[in-house]
Length: 556
Image (cartoon, rainbow, N blue to C red):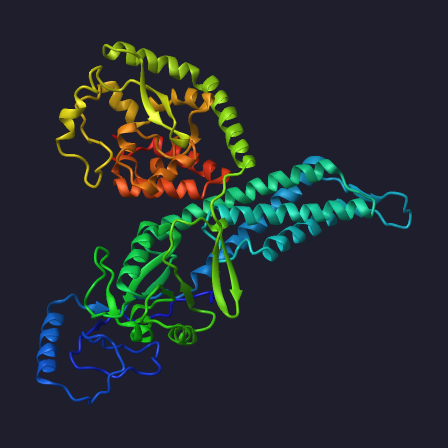
């Protein structure tokens, strides 16, 4: 169930703990303050007999609650941000389309009253291009609406949104062209050929600007769905960690309900408050102001209970999201297929067709060749800086492992002293970056030369790898090229990264670089291998340029 969600307003008064078992109220008034008990929120009768041990446990729980941080009712948005944001897109789209269509008309025909005629049909009354342009604007905006280019499922999602905008525009112009051909209407082809690419470009530019604005808002907790997680502690922790890693996705976790939930506890490593057990969802929604309930896997949450949760959500204002345990699967590989009322999720097996490999190789060859031609003066300057800054060769050659586990010689500008390899064994015993048991990375490696430090910070030392790309041993985008000594330590599943060529850049490069742990580096590499697409490569290259220009503290 996916519906637009709004965030009703609550006050921010404290919720006081109550050590006594409480009876859950069937319905919760949206403006009422709710007491949050320190024991799991269950359907325990208010006058159930209690043993002496139970009295002692209740007393201990009450004492713990008195020292725990006070839970407060989360403030909710006073407007439906999705509708407000969609309205802004409607206005922007209208302005862009009007400017594009009428601007193209005036550019091509001037301010005069140019006419459209129909061939071999004297009965047809010539029509002004002003009327045709008006109809074209209406048709274009209608196409954008019909293909849901402003749906809350895609706004702010980047590529998915851009694809819908492009698709709707191309389809609309295709329909216009077919009608004009069949009816033999003389429409200036140049007029349409200018309006279409110009309009798509301007629409995508406006959506990109709005997306950046939305991402900035989401980074500070605004314009995001308020999510209540429900499921086992392990699955809830996993989902919470993934959502916290991607605030731009627009999901802000405000609480969790787990089978053994105790109010005033938090999900380990996240700081997310536990609002009770899986029977406390209704009350937890009211307390946290959640507009989205994400149900993860747990044996304590049967199908009937999930139905009850969905029935309790306010239609048109709250969501139910089912979150499977599988992760790092790209959208195009996921398909839903309802069978006998079961919402089955079909995950396509990763494939690497000849057509895909040909497209990737062609892109690599064209971009690397043009790139080397354009940056050849820069390469000469960098080579001279390396040559005269320290003794030794300009180019550093090292054996790496590529596709199918085949070794190749990787090229880089030398950024270390000549005897760097000989000094490696002594440095390996020193403190490494936390979490990297396989990779050797030091924040202040003494072997790096002064000019080498600058080259590494801005990834300039990797520019000679364009020759590797031309030669076919590497790709522009791919997993990190591994050393043979590292490969010897790989677990079996990590060898899947050799299904594709290593890259000059990749997900690891734009997601943290040297700050990543070994496990995170592997996860990103395998995610790339299983979800590769040419469009995804373009996105990574764009992010790489941004990361190289503003490297921050993660590059060393």
